[in-house]
Length: 350
Image (cartoon, rainbow, N blue to C red; front, side, top):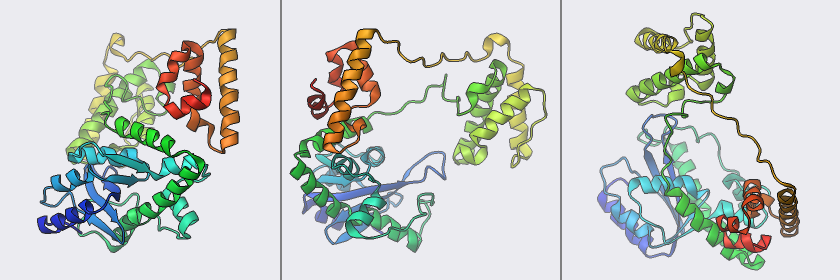
């Protein structure tokens, strides 16, 4: 584990001496309310290194040198978001092996599936839910983390050659640039709707007010304990409790006791006392757009062209354009093609 300034400085020199590195990250979102980056894996030719962001070291030199080389990732969106959180600047180039695999027509494009297909290696499972903030890192987690970058460079080489054979390298570059830009967008939660969890749509207005109060209670409890909200109470239990409180039942979910149970009850009671005008308004349903006959014909033609092309190229049709994009073009006209990437537009004739 690289957790001292001298060791990090040596790694920075090695990264600077190459033009492509594999990168992965691990966070503790399943164990803490305030998610943090707990590990950065760096894959080099012949070596896979683990960097400890929790140690007392300045990662700026590493992040700086990473911005000057091509970064190979698998499913880059999450890892880029984690690196941005550490202060990473814009990468010079990203090669996403998941996107590359899909563009070559791979039916299975998960990292483990690709490693098994290309290198006949079965990667160990079961570490996805591990607490990566614990130190020292357990030997099995050390191996798991290193394997996450161990095959990336060779996999990128193979997929890159196949993309070149198919004439699709530019498709990957355009797609990766979009991922890089999208990862920079900070996802803001909407206080008016963030509490609407799965199952909440069946609740009446007063029960919905209780659910909203219980959701906010859970957030306060989770933040105070620095634990994920589901460690306090599951979404299903929140919805169930809201409905039972609304029916006048006494509710004491298993696992809640003492002060936490008392605060849970008070949150529900306060919501039950709200005036009807203070209850949340049910959001309008998502009605399917109503198309004119001309728009219907345009949509059918676009979908037919997309599906035929996808079959000819042996790739997923959604890679060329998801249904929502086709519907937008059908309704708004050719100007809506601008939302697609150039390679996607060229295949659709836009």
